[in-house]
Image (cartoon, rainbow, N blue to C red; front, side, top):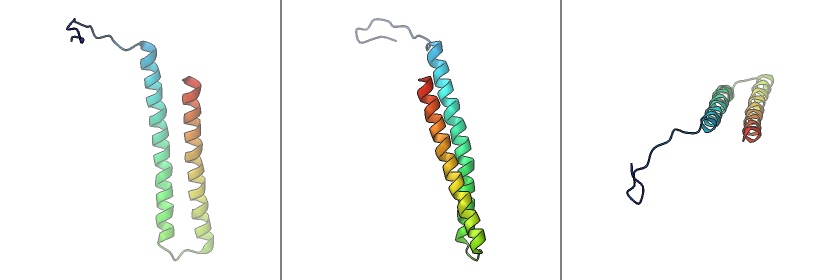
Length: 89
């Protein structure tokens, strides 16, 4: 590889600290995405059940409560991930 002045350059391995930080970022992002996806599937399932109709008001209220709870869980996970990122950055 050469630079703009056609002088040979060497490639350097990434700094070990940088690799660890990036690995940590990937692990947090992956964990958050996995957990959020599970909760999103619960939300989708309850929304589909609600859309089918013919549910008692009690059942509708139960499903709506579960959707709200899942949304709050996703919000909390995002906040924890953001806090972890800021604390480590």
